[in-house]
Length: 307
Figure 1: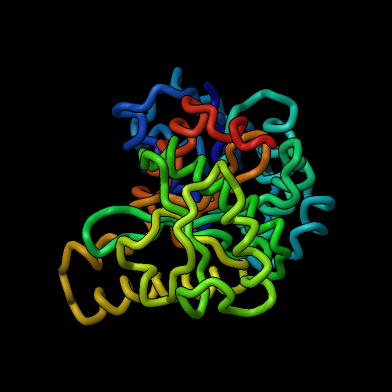
Figure 2: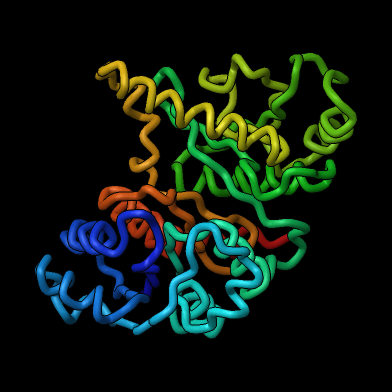
């Protein structure tokens, strides 16, 4: 098992990536391919005491900055850590790829270097939702597909259900459609057309509509919406943790909104795990991203999403 890590992506790269690797290697078994500038990365690996036999350092002299145009940057910076990472992933030289760098470049690379799985109309991205009773939910899409068709949401529900079962450990996950009312027939044209598709899908444990007030409650395990709506909810959820920190509220529930607990967001519906981290990821986030990638490889969850 080989997991690739973009060592140059993120505000605190490469030091926090190296520290996250050190944490992972206390228990983790994967061989790590570290993609980055040797002059910057190698001294940090030595400084942090990373065993040489646990990784391979792949020199990548270029970096795609956070604000660069994703498609143009991937074409023009073929020696960047992200471009090399996708080349190695697509050619079978590694089994998963992680980055806290340019989100757009990671999404473009996922879509064009790997291609969607057979039958998948559009890949999607999800986020973990901490439930108030201690359980965990999944919301998707959260930004990859701002405009969707009913068929897309139906597939997102299926992929989210598979992910919840194999990665989150939820047996027979309850699937719901995020809507402005609980009754069938509520919502905009997209919601009204999606509801019967989800209801008729025998692969899903569909429980109907949920409203915004239900997202943090234990009404459903997998909640489906278009990426525009989902991204707004994601950013709102992130703000809960920031407000709690600013007001010095130390509470177990609000602490669960810390994105570093979950590492990053996997792209679902492609052939191999690609995990996108927050730009301000520190060591704990990198550790958890690598651990998630390892679990996704072990379970073969991506291959199970083919239709």
